[in-house]
Length: 152
Length: 278
Image (tube, rainbow over all chains, first blue to last red):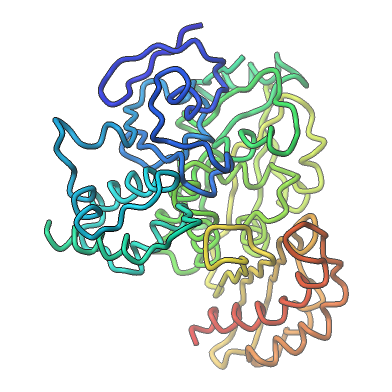
């Protein structure tokens, strides 16, 4: 059975078992390796992607249920070599961390910027409660998000 | 086999046909972690998350009806302006993390018998909720505590389809203690619903404890002990400390059994203070 998916605007086909976690299809079949399968429990957020604009842990979504949805990975956030507002702010604030948790953080914060233009520091922290950093920290990321919100 | 059911009738037909080889798949936040628990996936799943009837919340004059596939996020949002359901809004709106709340369903929270730390179970127990279980042969209404006893032995083809919660003027609150501030499972949960008079004397109380034992349950001795008293959080905590010995905490890698019990008085104090608005 062939599954059809829309990923970063492209129509893709997969022959994976329908219960296969979306993150595995993204990485193994489509070679979109920004989403990381780290905890595979929905706790760490490293596999976060946008499904119909909603942050979704792709380790917990069977690929069959992703059919008919607009899936955006971290690779598909910017366009034409241009950074998004949150990507630019994270770079400007020197908040970019190792590549394990960070793609998921960018995905979550992309949604926050789109939906909560008045977000406070506490609300940003709450939004990131499902994105775990194990090596550096959160404060500069929160600062960068506040600066991106201030620009908008 | 992964069948995405377009309607409740087709879902019940498929579950009936699949028998013990099949299971309902709602948010997937428990089932998709089966490999981590070293459990096998079922051979067949029936996805119920796109069934309109199961994703509705109906707020009536006497009851609210919550479809089993309503997500925690949708439920918290729907209850935001109903103070009587503060306990349920908090349970649905603070569990796990935001992305999980967008996937995990109320039905999954209630039907997953191995999940002891489900926030919505004690919240709905203290609200005196009823459940509706459906199959091809009809629908059956049962109290939530009855459903909790039967859920692991429900016959194949039977599906939790709805939760019905009576409306009241009681004050409610939800207190939970996760090991981190947010984002993980609570060590213990206190959900309570208190009917108090104008001088804050307790006329009726329903208090439910989650995550301490394997299955959430009402704390009836504490409910009885609070009846007729002026509600005072510190005193309620003292009474809870005297009665907490009836709980035997469950063991786990996160905390020892005694710890889950030892935090109950503090959570009772927090929950009663929240219910009083102090």
